[in-house]
Amino acid sequence: MAKALGMIETRGLIGSIVAADAMLKSADVRLVKQEKVDAALVTVLVEGDVSAVQAAVDMGKEEAARVGELVSAHVIPHPDEEVGNSLLKDENKESQSKETPKDNKATKKTSAAKTKSSIQYKAKADSAAVEEDQKVE
Image (cartoon, rainbow, N blue to C red; front, side, top):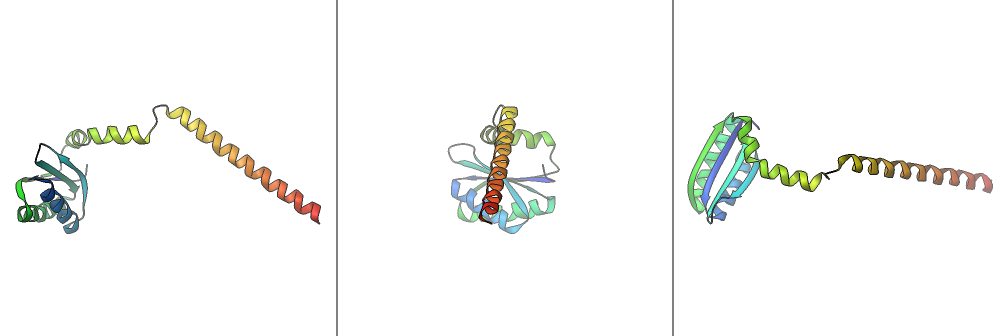
């Protein structure tokens, strides 16, 4: 995790989107996730340096209250690593299952074989072109 974690909870999706937009535009923070908590509650999480996250959450609170209903906002400076792991647990599992096949060794072997065969094909094509040029001369 970065140095701070900022959270804004709104009642309604539009307020959360406006808050996230304001936070990202106002400071150098990264959007961690936007999660629908309940039927109408939505939480937006950002991370970055403590001062940047604090500035972003302050701006996000103002904008969320302007267009919708702000429920709560909070900044955790220097959160424990386990907090980040638990918040991102579902997200990490999904990205790993989409990006990384389960049998990584088989994939590496297949990829290496494809690379080797494409290099051999290119070498054969190059040598055939050289032979063709020599025949023409």
